[in-house]
Image (cartoon, rainbow, N blue to C red; front, side):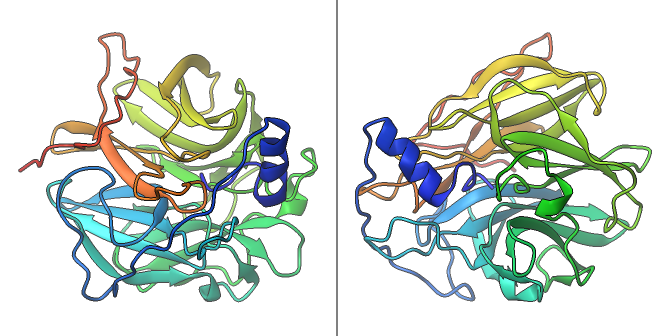
Length: 334
């Protein structure tokens, strides 16, 4: 998730080496998911709750935004995340909150930590890939939940983790199996990408709940976390969080399996947040870059983040223009 990377103590240790400190954060008012209707316009797009690690799904003329929920009370300096949130919009500006469709407790084998996730649709089913802490295998793991509609309710599709930390032993950390993202080719072949410190990918079987072959590694410059795969025309794009504090960079390829050619920075450091996590979508003829910053947390944003949206533009050669982060956000589309 982009709440990922070097995580809690390791992140704080790195900040210490850099001579940086994270200030305490102020509390923010919470509203009921059943009744909250976020104010329209401007970044961050959700102002009633802290939201992080956005992923988006376009389905039947609606954008569904899935996000983690930062819940740590001030002055706690840690990621406290137990559930995921979902919002919907038909114009990219007015966002309606819906009851939380998924909680870590839905995975009986998981202990905690509702980290980055993504929902994809296949054959009328909606599959939610989420990073959590495993309760018996040390380290982070990736689970899959399923529902009949994008708002859920979602339930565990396997009864066990799809990816566990003991499946990727080349990286000796407990959080390298995070930030899942799924892309489905036109021929029906689905791919799961994920990782921290090392980017991995594997094919998925048509049931979307089993791997279809070995786990592969992707070599990318200064890869930290938060891979996101999308396609435009004949080009595949693999964007990801790089360095720390994190910038979003990207690579391009003619094949989803690479080789990938590094293209540089897509999004600079997000204000008041050491992490970043992106989703890229097309909706009603326009392209959008969805990310998080610490825009509504005046006392420090790394553990209390907020989702933002800005326009995304492409050059004639297929490369992406660097995203301009704004406080105004995007204009409504019809």
